Image 1 (spheres, rainbow, N blue to C red):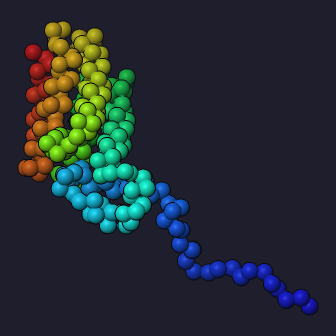
Image 2: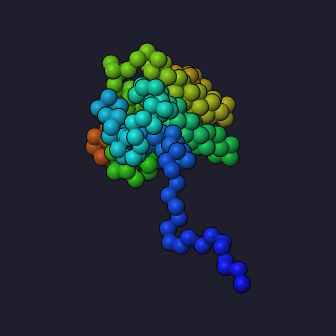
Image 3: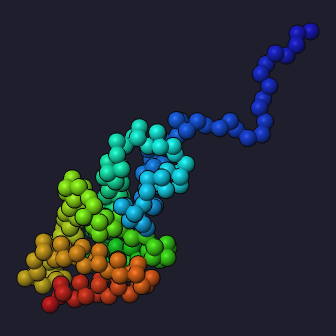
Length: 211
């Protein structure tokens, strides 16, 4: 009778997957976003992020040539996420335009509450560190603001067409004003650990559209 020479079934924990087989770059991006929406880019050492992600420094430089290149990649990722969020709220055709803006701000308030007002806007946080950023970095931040302003401007134009806001409102300027004020409200909300600055700003912004 022949002996059974088949490989025995391995029991217990599955074999470990090598780090090289994991999506290390995505892990670094996710960890960076979690860290830098709470802490500053300049103040956060690369070692802090690598330790949190459990990624060796050699692997980091395989994907990013420098900390600045990493920072710009984080802005790219955050911008993609944020544009998708704005699109979701501001392009809902079955919802009145101004109500869409309120829905977006309420969602943002809910998100800040979830993290006890410790996390804010990555682009807004970086805007506080301009003296330490290169021109390329600054240009990338401005591109994000411009894209976000365009989303609000489209929404305000629809409100004007429907007669919801005053006909004399300059929607281009008001869309820029929205983000200038909103970023300030986010910073104040982090300081006070309260949604009051966000709610107050939203209310005053909407009133300005109706006068």
